Image (cartoon, rainbow, N blue to C red; front, top):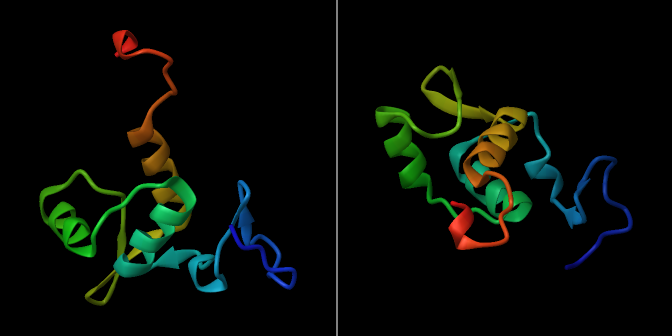
Length: 93
């Protein structure tokens, strides 16, 4: 993990140093994919987000004209919900 000493305030999340472009309030699909991987360890492709926008099941989004934008705080909540609570055994499922 690389840390940057001159990172803007709030650029560190849970020990992860994120680039400033991923700290925006709303993220475009490709940025959201990069953010979810860096912040939560979830690998999702932009094409998967596009499918979820049509069929449902993905993180909440808003539109600016035709551009989908994902509020970062809602994406965090969605990721936490999908990840669920930690377990210690497969028999707990």
